[in-house]
Image (cartoon, rainbow over all chains, first blue to last red; front, top):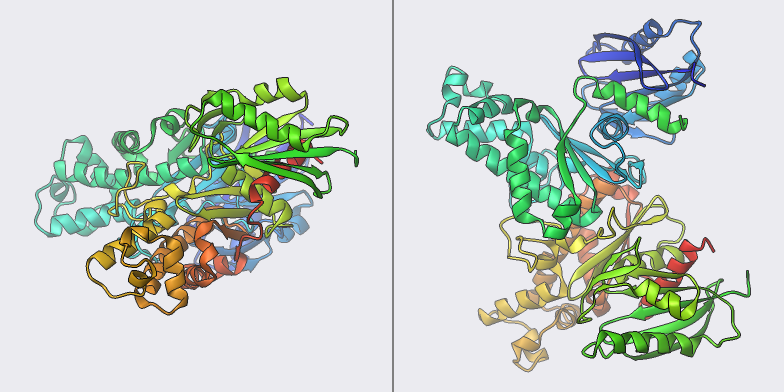
Length: 319
Length: 319
């Protein structure tokens, strides 16, 4: 068993990456290439098989292949129902396709679900039975470990943490509802809020950071401005952090988890945002819930997609 | 095994009820007496033991005792941390207390959690793997079955569905936050909203229903007025139903359950409220989620507390 290897694949909109790990989680090989998402489905599948072959010399026995991708999956049937950033990926029987090519078990997962699994197995959530992973980037996604198991819901569409309505009268979300967490506190929402306030003429370092090109502002710039003491940027982080705290407290009441793990691009700008969130949770959550739930930053960053795909294979094969 | 019996107890703020069931769920005996919640803890415990003895003749072999109560429990240690409507119930080691008296396994659960379990095992949720039970009465509570198992969270405090913030700028909730579901759509909130609008002078049948005593209005009267075509009452049900629908759609995104079971006193006034909720969900939920999730009324009413306590024993003893 120890001589077996696992193949992990992170199929993203811009890069496909693959790696070979031992079942003890030791990385042995890793490659990447552009996804070419604008090309045909068949061509992306070709590249996918090619990266797998690059990390898998024929003489090495492999226990299984895990693949994470940004999409909605039918976990039971191994079908990609729809994938963001991969055009034409509708009802793709990816598992059978790869099974035919490689003749080892193939497992697939939504990338945010697998990031949760990765943090639980290899990162900030080790040893915890119930945790929620929240990824705050351009959008907001997440994954949940409940009773030590990845929970994806009845049809694999659970943990869509970005679409929790927090303000029924709030800004319209692309999902059609109002005041979803994603519309209030994603990187995109933070950037838009900054732009709006600067357009109204408010004073801020942000203007100089982007040479007056307000459309260039992202949550990263807001984070940089916060670190430099900019009060507009601080107010925007406080507002978004308040919404995230409200969502976390909702989840405390609902799932009473031991741990929240916060990841995603918005946290790359430093710890200021995390601190805002922790502070707001302290004000909103009842003592007993707050004391039972830690809020920590993600431990895995660059390779979280690969770690997640590996964790999926290990979970499914009970390794 | 078939000759074994289970004892189920429903310890409420006004009544203690106990029943004896066969392990096939056949009711053999049932008694009830006033809780006497204003009396001492010791006296309530005495009554509790007394109702158990009344349904348990000494010659009958019993597999276990299940108890549901309206409180926050430490499931692992079998301790009542706090109970609503039972004064002085703080850190009560109820399980050990009953174990000493009866020498059979004792299991305890929060009443809303157990109602979910009862609906899953004996009621509207039979055969479903993932369901959420929402109880809308004076307050709002609930329970969740995830992956065929009662999920109560890391420390047994999960499924507090009433404290999901839906409107950060909404009315203050008794928990200290704003715009929780309970503050917007509980029986208490519905009644308060009706009173407010009548006090402002709006016209409605409700005024005659309570002989002008606006303080007498409850959600029941609002339901009766809806059935009689009263437009103010209809507007209030539509508003509250919209909030509940928003909460259900949040839960669809989060847990992607196959089923919502709606119970609690507010639904006793007829089907109008359920219809409002289903209509609002149809407008708010994306097609794929809506098609995967049914919304049905609870099947168990009067005895749901006893069925839940029975289901708990059967779950824990794998009967």
